[in-house]
Structures are given as structure tokens and as C-alpha cells.
Image (cartoon, rainbow, N blue to C red; front, side, top):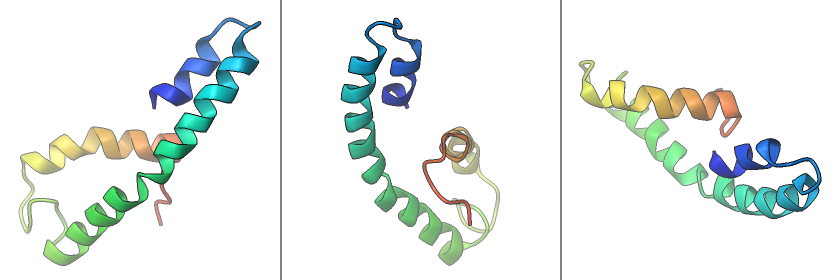
Length: 79
């Protein structure tokens, strides 16, 4: 997320250079997010409707912020 945000907040005259460097790094890290998202999807479908199993637990609340952020930033397909 940091590598996505920094180029838009940099000074206008260095923004093209910063964007080129940071977008390359951000793309590399976004590709590494596929496996964790697949693991979370498998845990939700195998164990039940929640990360902790059949009951809503602390894990579900802890995962709400990163999943919301990933959804808003377009890091995964919600379908």
C-alpha cells in the first residue's frame, strides 16, 4: 500500500521518477498477494462462514481492516 501512495504524494517534478520506481516495486508485491488471498478464501469456504470457524471470533475482526483495504485498493477480485 505504501508503494502505491508515495508517488501520488511526491513533489510534481520528481513524481515521474518516483512513480516509475515505486510502481515497479508495487507490482512485484501485488503479485505476491495472490497466495495469501487464496489461503484466506480456502479457510472461509472449508471451515465455515468465519475465519475462526462456525462462530464469529477475534480473528474475523482483526481481518476486517486488511480485507477492506485490499478490496478498496483493488488488490483482489471480490468475486
